[in-house]
Every structure is written in C-alpha cells, then in structure tokens.
Length: 300
Image (cartoon, rainbow, N blue to C red; front, side):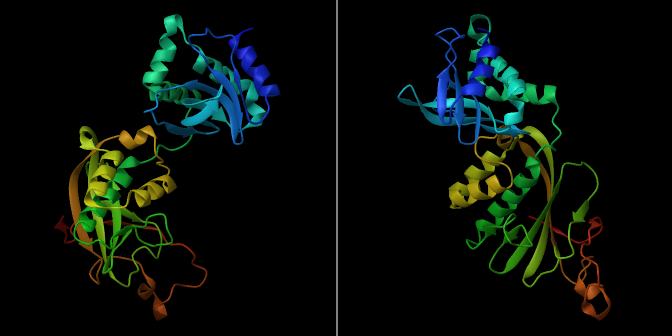
C-alpha cells in the first residue's frame, strides 16, 4: 500500500487515543499515525534534546513525549485538529514521513525540522502576520534594565495593565521599530498615556543581525539577573512565543535607546485634553501618532 493511502485509511479508522505504525515504510525509518485528544497526524522519533513548537493555520509541528510500543520516547509530531481536511492533510503527512533516497529526507527533518516547516508554510502561503520578535526583545531589554535596580519590576504587557512594565514607583511603555529613519510611535488607546505613577516611554530602534540578541538570549540574561523563569515563559506564551518556536532564536541588534518622561510637556491626548476634563460622549477609542523628533530625551 502507498504511504498516503495507508495514512488516509488510518485517519479514517483510528481510535482516540491510538498510534499505528505505518507499514509502508522501511523498518529502519519507522513512523506512526496517531490520534490524540486534540487532533490527528503522524509522529517520528527524535532526539530527546530537541524541543519544537510551531503553529500555522490548522497545523502544528511539535515535540511530545509519548508511550508507543510500551516505550516512552520523544517524538516529532505533525498534526491537525480539523477533521474536514483529513484527506488533504494526509498528503503533507506522507511527505513528512517519507525517508527519501537513502533516508536523506528523514535525516534532514530530524536535524533541522524548522527548514521543512518553513518550506511548507511558504508553499501553502502564510496569511498570518509574522510575529514581531523585535517588539518582545525591546520589552525584555527594558525589563532587564529596570529589574537590575528595582526588584519590584514586573512584565505586564498581556495582563490587566495599561502599560508594558510596572515598577513600584513608575510605569514604562515600550515602543520599538526596525525602520532606519523616523521616530514616530503609535498610541493605541486613549488610556495608554494616562498615569498615576511617573510614566516613561522607552523607544528602541533595532535591526535584524546575526550579531544581535534573540528572545532566548534575553531570557537567559533575565534569569541570570534573578527574574523568575516561570513568569517569563507565561508572558512569552501569551504573546505567541511559546517555548520551542524557532522565532525565539531570531536575532536583532539594538541600534538606539531613548527614554522620554510623559509629563505636562509631552504631547498626548488624555481626559484633561477635553472640555470638563472628560472624554466626549460616544467616543470609545482614540488612536494617534506622535513624532518624537525634537522632544527631550535621555539615553539608557
């Protein structure tokens, strides 16, 4: 039986949970059709040290420890949760498990699964926007800068908080760009520059560079400085950068770092900008752009 036909038949008849060896493959290159609580797909054994976690539309490529043939091992899993596309998804799975001439395909995938994953994303067409790692690197850089002198510093970008970073005596809003020229920033809501504590805007210019630092590199610096690893991972996961995603290894060099205090001289739109110090009726959202050029700042 052809690999693709066997996979399609197993998708249609497999029970949950189950793992069925693909008999069409040579014994030296085993693979399994699996069904688990959150999807179906195929799995191949991979080195215990490998950790992968990638998502694209209805598909996911990740590592997972599973018990197959009464042995707990680390597997590289390609799966989907969309039952309506079992027939089409089997084609991708067949290409994934096919060892190729002399096992070359299998060797390449096990050594660097991200290359295979990226090729398929480009072929299918990635309609999702690329996660902007440089934003997170900038936020982590400010977090590290503040935490070194103030242990109360918390990364609060995805929590119920108006600002990216909160300290005992001040709040920090982080803005970043990879544009070489220009200093415009976007204020995404009317509340972003409201504050009770002192508020600072940290503005960073970055560029992609092999000599730069990655999210994982920043994470190590923060942990070495004493910041809680669990808090870091929770924040990264909420922002879509969970452990094992290759984008966490993408490096950026920080070219410029500015710090602005949001005081009475700083241009902004807040409640006190309007008559009777309140927002006009029926106005539910305000977004605007500020050009920082010409505004006093310090370097940090």
